[in-house]
Length: 245
Image (cartoon, rainbow, N blue to C red; front, side, top):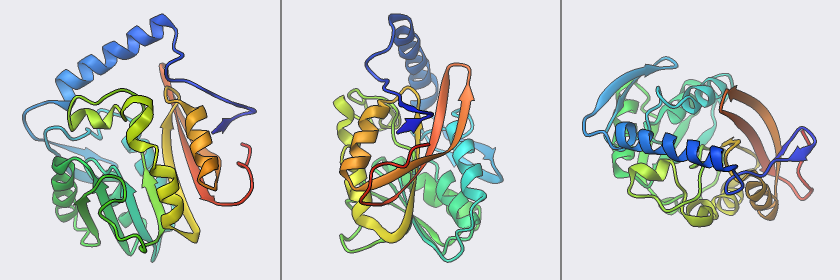
């Protein structure tokens, strides 16, 4: 995707110091957060959430609150929504809070599916239903959506287990390579996809995948912390090149 006037490419091109830092962050996040053995509860962006073991924690990792606030600012009245990689379900709940008629929350991790369904019931959103799925695999091919939501794993590398799938998307981003073409096939003609990426991701690869899927993209929000930036993009069906930021 384009940020300013140039495309940023990260991932395996880190400086040695940056690579060591990222490795340490993953080590401590994986050991003390992602693989915790007990469920916990938290409150984020207006929701009371249960966070089960191996499920991405929406309070500790700031991307969830940033994306949730954006979704809650939209008018999704009457829209049909699907989320790819739901985790605790906070983004699906945010879409429902913004007026969505139906929300399907998908995740490959069965613990995330359980958490999302639990949190939908806990917060009173009957229109949110979660299912186990590898990307769109659980959804009939003819089913299309007004809105697609996804905050995919930021890094390449083989995930150790279901918990680590929230962090690593396989070598060369193997596990999310089909996401863009599948999303293009599932969007209504006037539909939109909202995608959150990290400055530490291989944004040049994501740009190429977006283009090859026949999608246009524009950056619509940014959140920076001292070590990283998060970019929120709006994607739509188009025959032309990406819309520059």
